[in-house]
Length: 480
Image (cartoon, rainbow, N blue to C red; front, top):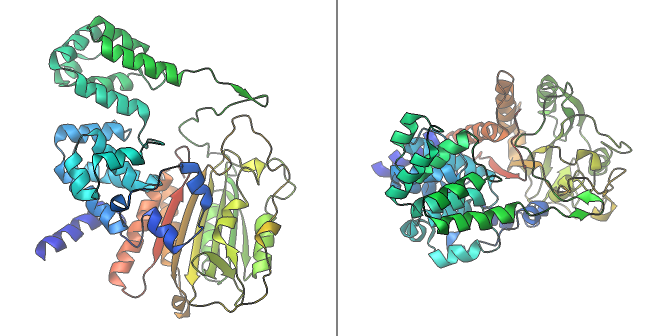
């Protein structure tokens, strides 16, 4: 019992959610069938083997067990595969990194399992995920989660004997500082320093290929040649436009007016709080209150109607409404409601060409009702309209459902009966965004603080739990 208490205390200090906050995608979609199909289309992951699928609490426990089981060298390899060149190689830092990465991926369990596969820690695969090496490899057959370049470098490092590493050190001469070469105990240490100096990158490995030829590792040079040919293939032209180009690492989010923020408050509690916050973040904010279903749909599809060039760097949509597992009801009491996935559908690249390549953030607070009275359907999915210019080809062929962050929180409707009720989720969101005005922060780091606030609330208020679902198809880093 004491060990269990100690574990819960460690988890609450290091991570920012529990099973009610960051549930596994399979569990989420079983509770919300049809929710955000666009995310599944973009990610294209094989469905995980049943033994590998983890709930939120199991995911946190898996991160804890993995971090405690790895050696210092294995932790370094994990940091590298996670695209982190952090010199802090501690267990606590690893837990924080894995939590952040799992939050960023559609299939967190598969991400962790692939890490263990490349570490050759098949014992952890069996003990933590209940899966064999073959099962994980089959799940990864259609697409790897980890960056291919990093995986290749990590595997090459395992194939390098100490004399090979010393030979490469000698070839590097004065390219690396003396103390860096002296402290480098394996090839991965050298790769990290060469990346820091911008001597190699996923698109530039010729220098490394020459090094391998000089030290007699022709086998490794051939691996790099094959890799180099695959990443530098000529880009064909499609319909007069170039095929998809590699995006830069960060969204532009510095314009004087950041973009449009639409707020629809159908319960009348927190709309003004959100309005003031996003105004302070330099958004052009429009707030609507107490809308019915038809009015809600009308306002959503009318945001950019007739506009070919949407000014600003992005778009924010906030909706506060009663609802069911899959639909928002607005103020209606006898309606099928607006399907959650259709909220996103109205602002995809195909539907709204002016938002292609720009981040689209959705913050939804819904209050779950126990039952909805049947009535004539007022708004059919096929009647949802898109803006002018939708569906046009764009020069970089960005997927239409890319660049979305979907944050959906739900709790029981009875909480609205409390005097001066305020959503814990929206209060945490506005508080966290307020702090970001002092120093711009990554949107996923901001969401971790929201997770933490909800976790603390749920722990101290049983029976008044909030549940949070985060999905993202963001292609770049976003700082608010």
